[in-house]
Length: 271
Image 1 (cartoon, helix red, strand yellow):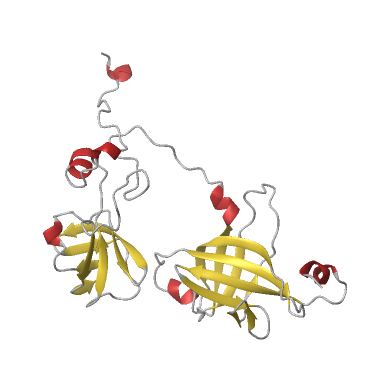
Image 2: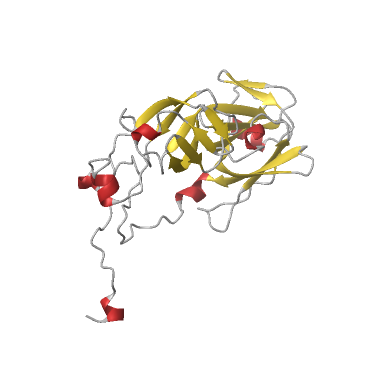
């Protein structure tokens, strides 16, 4: 019998669900079944997990957010206990029937974790997950008429090579105090060389908000201290024509701003 046959059967169906979370490059797989389920070599661990009802929205493109509840000691949820991680988490929800010898599955939902809420005693946590279709219909601002570059550093329009050794440095963190990382050698690259860039440690990213010689101030701290560890530090950009695009990156031909925006509006001040 196929999934459809079990699904429409009055008595034969034994529905279970498989939750496949992808956190960065790490998979966390769980099932609502009473025992573990192995599909195509991947093990879905039996765990207390529940969700709200899947319902179609009036706007089919938006859909309704899925709320998934798991125990507070869940390994995936542990990544959210201190601060919001820099990695993105996606969910693929599969449905199947455990008595189906073909182990046929269907995808019932796919989305991205937007928030995690713990209850008062951290016994459980609820994830709010936005359908992938909703992300595809978000309104994205057009380029604006401004002096600063509209491109994102290292994207397809900027074209600065992200993996170049000129912009990517592997350095050792000396000390960590709250959000400040002291990294010997960082100041030698320039006084604000890494501002607007990021630090990569154990697959997690943190934005560099400020730099004072070898001291880099992150927007938020890492959940695990990188003290004494080698990190990747990526050059940043303030989107300025002369100081960044020309002097720092030699990339004026790809500048995405409008450097000659008039400072006065003739309709307000007169000619």
